[in-house]
Image 1: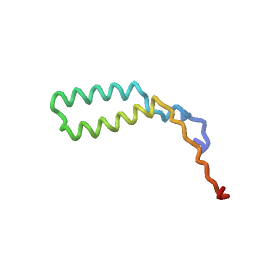
Image 2: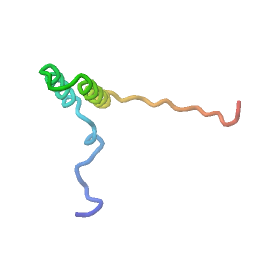
Image 3: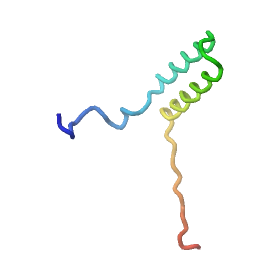
Image 4: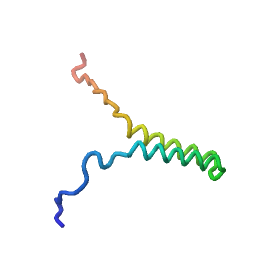
Length: 72
């Protein structure tokens, strides 16, 4: 196996799947309803999953910073 082997990692391989996060959120909610999770643990985990979902479903645009080095 060479260092520069052509293997299966492309740009989309590291993206988190939105469907997976949706199903994970549903399972988390079921666990909370059954009383398996404390309220604090539920909100911590849900917050992380929502962030992953947003990363998977949106592409934020970065604003260019305009820096005025001339002082005008």
